[in-house]
Image (cartoon, rainbow, N blue to C red):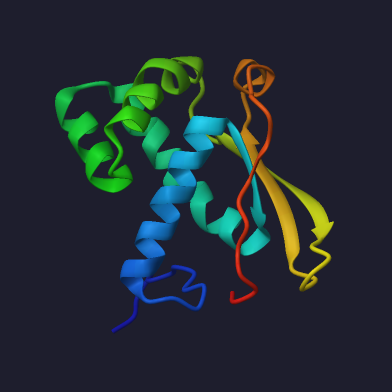
Amino acid sequence: MRHRVNSLKLGRTSQHRDLMLSNLVASLIKHRRITTTVAKAKAIKPLADKMVTLGKKGDLAARRRAISVLRQPIVVKQLFTEIAPLFKDRQGGYTRIIKLGHRKTDAAPMALIEWTDSAASAEAPAEATVETTAKE
């Protein structure tokens, strides 16, 4: 049965999709905001929020779970030391998606995903652009 199974497939195998989403979340943590397609932004929003929740817990088990998902210990350290403390008083909704229009090459709808906290957005380095293929 298929009860409550809802993940965007994005035209990829499950292994490719999991790696792509973890890389996008790692880029979001590293660069504070990224530009990607709307479908991918909507797919990484729940995963990014779960990573911040793990960062707020801050214990060893949460750190190991974050490393198992993100696969980059340096990014996990940045999540636990810089990103999660900004949201210590917030109960959810750590990311926002801003639609940007269509990409020129293939007319794919593009979006900017960033952290909602003003301090996280203010410290953001130059915007990271994630080039993606037209396959969604």
